[in-house]
Length: 300
Ligand SMILES: *Cc1c(COP(=O)(O)O)cnc(C)c1O
Image (tube, rainbow, N blue to C red; front, side, top):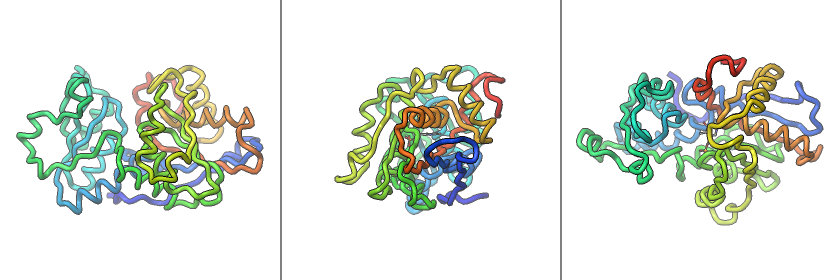
């Protein structure tokens, strides 16, 4: 089984498909692994190394029914020979989402808690009685924390990224973005596209993971959420289909579709100059497309 270490990834050049006046490349983290896809692989790696060092046998984390983070943990734990527990927000649905079914197929044990308990990240009593606290390794929701940030840093450090002037990534918890900012060189500008509507506190959540002096060296754009987290419009799906038929690159409707749409829109507005060289981070997440009804996307 492939080990969980941040590897070097392929870079695609969109200039072979489009007549942009600016160079635009895509860093294909989506190709890292079919399940522990994209930025999740990077974000989890330092937590998993730490769990190993501390001899922890069970990984526990939090997420919703469609969480890429949860299924990535389930798969990564399985590869590492560890148990995994998912604390899932809200009541157990009669038929579980494909994401949760897949997590269970990787051996993850699921516990459902109320939205209120979830807000507090309360670990249910049942879990505490079955699993001794000493054995549990808790990864925060979305991998948000210093170790997650270090994984985001690896995305730039383990790939040939020094020549780019702008690095653009989707933003959920901001962990990945913080890592990109931490690893960026002085000539590089980091741009985050929020996948969540009006999530203005993200600015300070990213800053909290950064050393002083780096805390404001990024830009967050909030106008490309398409109605909110995991919401979409026909315009977005049409863009994703067209982008795929030209480039062969699949995107997901929650994060990367919106991010790539944003970049195309910014290019139209001459937000970038011809001297700029853009690197778009394909953060993966393609498994999330399975929650769309069949036929909406021309790729699987
Ligand atoms: C989880 C995820 C993100 C968000 O990453 P954060 O580090 O939480 O900001 C972005 N893109 C994809 C595809 C994801 O699955």
